Length: 241
Image (cartoon, rainbow, N blue to C red; front, side):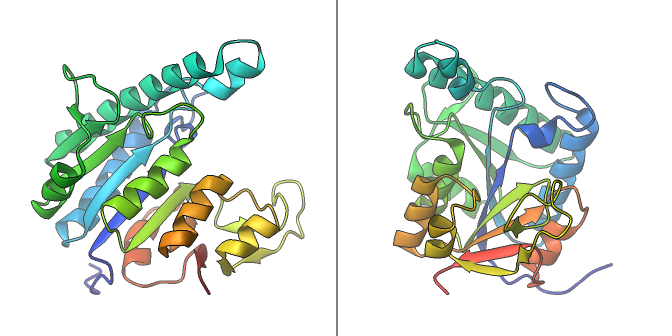
């Protein structure tokens, strides 16, 4: 059993909706969400306070339909509802394994989730509950990447983690270019200047302005979440340099 101490008190984990699809083309793979829940619980049990932001791309993408003619604001509101569905699924997966989890929504949907209130969110974390922040920022035109950056800053997280299907940030698509270079460390300005598509520019700029370090890693590699929190240099770190 790995008993190394963790180096972070509070973190924000950003998961893409697509990450939950696993072997499916749409929706949620129960095996994948159960494994992610297990890893989140593992770090919670060693005292790390953890909040989650989950995208909705496995169910619905507002920007995609907007490109096809739908009103962008309507599409984005539909996307927010998709993130709430994913958040409820994650809450269920966590509670099935004995954890205490709370879904907090940026839009009012009181029959299934609490309203997002910063002080209440921090209190949940302090009590050892896993907080799942749903519905993005509650505003159209902002991605769940921006929501993750905002929540990380609001809850005073020590680190924001972006879980992807790639083991870090590359200078080109590693699936198309076998010689693609993986970066171990970047500054916020590097990411923006090189247009590296780590997160959207608004999210990067917010992290830069408030000094929120980010680490991008491969969520499909079991155990990496804990290893990162124990100090292992996995994936790509983005900070002020």
